[in-house]
Image 1 (cartoon, rainbow, N blue to C red):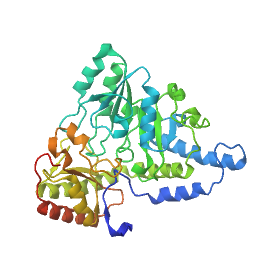
Image 2: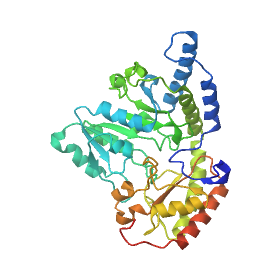
Image 3: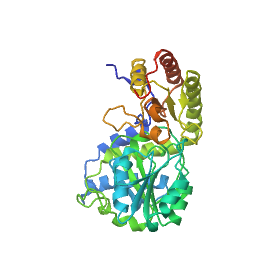
Image 4: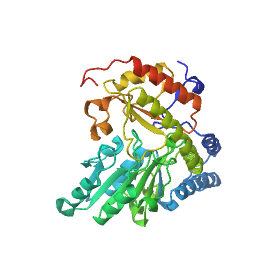
Length: 378
């Protein structure tokens, strides 16, 4: 199998962005630092300096104090740490379209979403007022990983705080793609993941609002690293690469959004002409993300055909051990049996016009030759 990057069109950025050159350079430099950041000798202090410089840079980009930036192994750990660390004595409410890392993190009540994929704030308000008004922890994603739909998190946070609830935001897909800060969202905690904006896999962060979170209960006790909130020797090269990638992504955000939105719109116009519908098209969305549904054509069959044509896309989350399953996101949006008939196209920062043209040709050909299956077979 030819896996050279120039041998195929990689359009699965929401699974993982290609590593940015700036991130790779930062990783190589950090890998050359020999010490452990917890050691007190000069080599350890040099490693600690790299770690804290990366932490400070990352925290500044998203408007939090450096001491409230807990470095993790990625978005899943950040989400789970946020929920387990803040849910004590609280009901947990999660949006129906949340990532599995959030849905599986706690026994939770599910808040519905509308046909457009946006959280139903009316239902949320009723749920917040239920159970005698017992305080809640509400988990809501800023941007959906399958459809790109953006939730009005600031309004949601204001509603939640009026009911004494805390708000955790999964911003894994939003970081580096749309602008936000902790205060701007009104959130109590935010999860991000480095490889979603061009950093390496294996690094993420939980961003916390306020000193009260200094004593957050760790998942990994370890040796007291991260002020006792996350044990284990930090992955210094990955963390340095994450901050370098975030710095470039945030600086280039507006220009990239304009460019990617134009390419996305071309893809969607061609897909609709070929018989597809765009899930979440009526809501604000990430500029790089399209969920294309071909009624009656199973997602797995579409993926195989497109892969054979040299196009790497997905059917939603890439966190299901390589399985192609019916989308819980599209189920929640009311697509019924067709929830298993959509693919996700997510354009990376490095995508070219030629790659988009190649995908459009491959998709149009595929849509024209795939027979529809019986209802329920998807």
